[in-house]
Every structure is written in structure tokens, then in C-alpha cells.
Length: 423
Image (cartoon, rainbow, N blue to C red):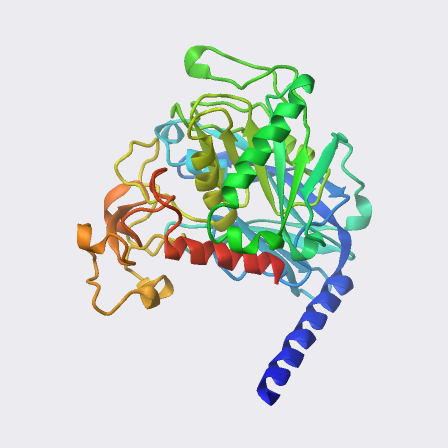
């Protein structure tokens, strides 16, 4: 009993210290740094666009430093006077995906990007790092910022919004914001119905079902001039609030938007941890980018399945486990190093992954045979390639839409992310 009391006191003390650190360094608002990535397959550069304040901070006030080491990029906020690291977060981008396409071998392009963090009370340095081919982070940008010199973002439009699941303080919950894309003013009732359908499906799966009380759900009714989305392969173009489109990088089913500033402007009317974009279309497709956004069409027979798969990417940093489907990418993952995605391994540093979850009787690598159908193992194939990359289960929602659910390794990764944002 004394040990329980000791650890309880220790936990409370650490929580109080963390909250004190938040109050010492931050206001209960956000600061946003908008910039553009410029480059090609071999080069990248950052051009600063705008720095603004936003009214809400929806993230944790305790876990201020990203310890998971995911993502292709990360940013750090460093107090200018003390040089202390006071906040950090990893993320991925559409730009780094484009860098692996054939187009990037011959042309330069520009992609908008944005980072959001709690509003510092005093001048600070914002540093951005890129993961190199060896898997190490290298600084590519830093800028000194005095928060007193900036005002609230004038681009924010006060779209109507509602909170349809309210479990309390955003700083201790996972706040998912659902944004309407390609819905006209007359279709907002449909948007609410579509969102609720996807949300109900999400919470029918573990681990989400068991920890539903750790989530808040927001709907932002961001109306578009026209219904639908761009389908360039069929010469269909629509005037929508977020300028989304299918055929990203030549892939018919890859649904995205490059207009990330518009996405952030719409989302900013509420506190959030993760952005979910619902596109008013019956065409199959979607996309998910870690700490960027999750996007899916809503009227396809497989929209539910696409949604939870893409949220696995954007929220939990999970990698694709399929390996027999064509993609637009060239050497997307380096097979010579351990990938950062928690559900993929090259066995280079397998001790960092799910090795402890494997039974001693299970062979490594594990053959894709019926006897191992429900066994955690190391199955060759994943990350778009059939050789040299391994995944933890024969089938999982990060591999196919027909899997019963997420495998134990992916469930563990999702739960770890939930706890980081809520504990």
C-alpha cells in the first residue's frame, strides 16, 4: 500500500510540475507558422509565409515534448533566453511523398505546410528538422519569433460548428475535428449524418471502443460553392472550400488537398488534435498523412473502411502493410534502416518494435501460412514492397479493408498515441 501511495504522489507531483511548466512558458492559445516547402527529389527548402495567433490550444498541457520519434519532419520550440526546449512535435507532409514520385526527378514544386503549437509567452526559436536517408533528423530551418509582434489570424472564417461528443477538457482528451468539403449550404444535414456514420464505425473497433470517453468530436460546417470534388481524370472540377482532388500524383484513388492553409483556417475555429476531412463524393478513395490530416470520400460502399485506415496513418503514424498494390512512389522507405512506423520493420533494429510481443515458438521471419493466421509474427511484405520489409500480422486494417480489425501491434500503437494526448 505504501508503494501505491508513493507512486500516486510521484505521478501527481510530476503532473503538477508539467502544468506549471505550461503556465510558465505558454498562454492557453496557439501560434501558427505557415511556410512553403520548395524542392525536387534531392533538394528541399523552406520559405516562410506567415506567422499568426489562433484562439484555441487543443493539445496536452503535460506532454509537451514528442518522445515517439515518428515522422519525416519535426519542429522544436526553444526559449530564446534560456535555450531550453519547451515544445516539440513530429509530422509528415504531402511534399515528402511527392519527392518520391517520378515527377520530382525533373521539376521543382512548392507545397504549403503549417505547424501549430501553444502560444509562447516570451521570444523563442522555431526550428524545423528533416529526416535524412539514414533516418537522422537534420535542421533545415530556424527563425526567431517574438509573439508580441503578431496578431490573431485574420483568415479565420467563423463557420458554424458543433460538439457532438463532449467528454471534457480538450487538454486531457483527443479532439477530432471533422471538416465538410464539397458540401453546399443546403447539404449540411447530410454532412452531419455522414460524420456520425463514420464516428459510429470508428468506435465499433478496438482500441477506440474501450476508450471512447477519452475523445471529443467536433463538426465544422464549412460550406462550399459546389457539391463534390475535383476528379481530373474525368475532367470534373468543382469550386470547394478546401480545393480537394482525386488522382493525386497520378493515383486515381488518392484523394488529397494541397491547400493546407485553407484546411488549418477552417479547423482553427475549434480546439483539435487531429483533422478529418469528409469529401462529399461517392468515388472510392482517401488519404492519411501523420499529424497532417485524414481525408475520405463519404458515399462509397467502402468509405467506413477507408476512414479508419487513413486515420491510422494521420493519428497513430501507422504505415501501410500492403505490398502487392501499385503506387506512385519510388523507394518510399529505405530498406537499409529501421522505419519509424511502429507496425513496420526491416529487422535492422527490431528490438525497438514488437519483438517482445512475439512468442518464443514463432519463427522470425514468419511464413504466411494458415497456422500463423492469428499469430503476432514478422511477415515479409509491407510498406509497398514484397521483400525486405515486414509487418506484424497476416492481415490488419492497415493492410486490407476486409480484416476483422486492427492487429495487436497496431492497437498498441493507437493506444500509445491516445495516452500521450490524454494522460
